[in-house]
Amino acid sequence: MDGTSTPAVLTIAGSDSSGGAGIQADLKAFTAFGCYGMSVITALTAQNTTGVQGVHPSPPEFVEQQLRSVLGDIPPRGIKTGMLFDANNTRAVAQVLKAHYADASQVPPLVVDPVCVSTSGHTLLAPDAIQVLIDELCPLATLVTPNKAEAELLLSQKGVSHQISSLEDMISASEELLTIGSKAVLLKGGHVELTLADVEKVVTARSDVAVVREELLLDNMEILQVHEKDLASRPLVVDVLKEADRTTLFVSPRIESTSTHGTGCTLSAVIASLLARGQSLVEATRQATSFTHVGIETAFPVGKGHGPLNHLHALTTRIIPPPTASNPHPLTRILIQSAAQTWKEYVEHDFVKQLAQGTLPRECFIHFIKQDYLYLKYYARAYGLLVAKSSTYASIQSATQTIINVINEVATHKTFCAKWGISEEDLAATTESPSTTAYGAYLLDTGLQGDSAKLIMALAACLLGYGEVGLWLKKEAAKPNSWVKLEGNIYLRWIEDYSGEHYQSAVKLGLETIESLAVADPPNTLRFQEWCAIWEKCTRLEKGFWDASLKLL
Image (cartoon, rainbow, N blue to C red):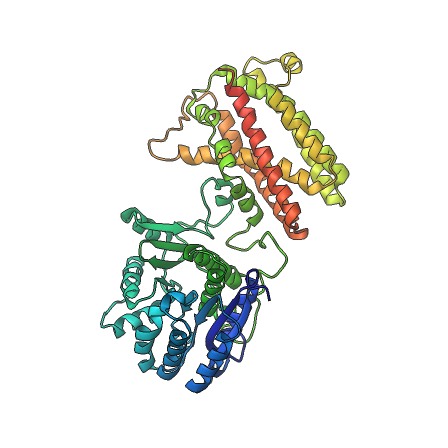
């Protein structure tokens, strides 16, 4: 075994005979993140998705024997504990770890999941074991991961009465829990219902709180926002990571699902795996919460009760995750994020801002619309290449219809130009700027390279980019005292066209096209890198189009 590329990770927990939680869930999670899984079994359970019917604990001497056996042969790079059952087993684990490692600093990253009660309400940790957990095991821990009930129980054991019902309660409870000796606390928020307003309230009041919105929309994703569920009132799950010097909130949409058996086990196991791989606590928690979220959302039915999440979703050979209800456009999100700075510079370009304020010099706009007329010819020709590469009548029809739409758009464009004093003869006599030639030539070159997917990516950057610009200006214009000036703006028609229903319908179709492509023909690593490179290149070429217009000044 290569300990560098495949780190060994150890779970010390109970066995779930139905396979959804306990060491079974842990070992699946370890595997999903490329780790070699080992286990010390503290108890056997008779359980299924409807509940726990019986628990048979391992004798503490045998827990010690298992743990010494593993530690003496295969050094773990990460450890997690789950159900320890009673005080004797809890003490046995703590004492072996202390004896094996010279001091606490040598203990590998240790994640303590203080499993006390099952989802069905079955007690999984004897009351006298809680104090042993606090006194002997938590001080060795890198991270403790209680849920709401477990956090309240741990605090009550310390003589602190703390009812957790809000995000502020979660943060203050995590601060209190940090005093039990672990380096950090992750207070899981699955049992506390919150909204985006709750998060924004805390972030506004506390500058020391950071937010990770892994499953939510980020800046410059307006084209996704209008096609996805509004998050303003949507229930959220917020997990609070408290470290000595910072607090981080991990925010994701709440999922109504019965496939939640073993979520706590899985979350802590993934964190242990990633810590074993050298990731920071924040990054490990980010990936773990995302993995667990998608696991719940893609779960398949198992049993008659609360089934397990899908531990296999990350093992599918997919660089792009499958579309889900909370993220129906995974490819587009990744493309935008892969070129985030270039995309932002394009969407929020000075040309766009001046146009929105009505201050863009007339000659700059005229240069732009004349070059846009010339660019449309390249755009139509590129779709002609796409027709030739299409393998179904439906895709041939779609690409052909786009060419017809472009031809119709040319007629509309001529009429629009006429209102700016530009005749058809003027358009025909216009010399292509280097930026127009560069962009057009790149489209045709991409189309000649033999891969229709690459050409679709190149064409989508233009379609979706203008849609994003239109929606961004529309959103900015709606803000109080907006810098966008629509009244009396000579460029109002342009803004309305690209933010309007007709163009946004084309954007919706474009989103569906590229997302369907990723599902039907998932790319390998090299092919996906080509897609991202094409997207970034076309975004830069779009930006260059506007750069050229402003350089007239």
